Length: 71
Image (cartoon, rainbow, N blue to C red; front, side):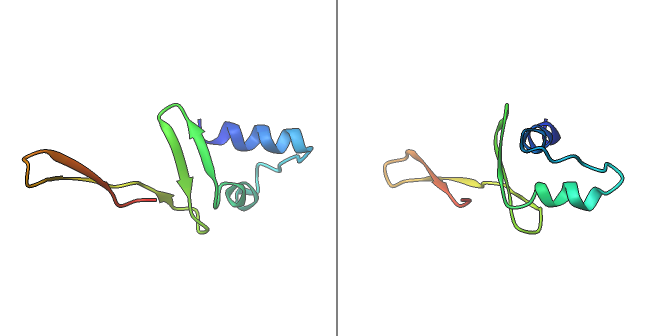
């Protein structure tokens, strides 16, 4: 699910991969957002995933309030 969008995009642009060169393919996964069935997956410049963190806290009215810490 992660590799297919990148390969399809390269195929449409006419780029042909040498699958023995993993660095070339890994560079295509960096600093982008992929729309997956589970939701968007974002990666940074070094290729690590950005995982959004949500914190629930109680308000003075005893209601849950959700705060997003991730981007």
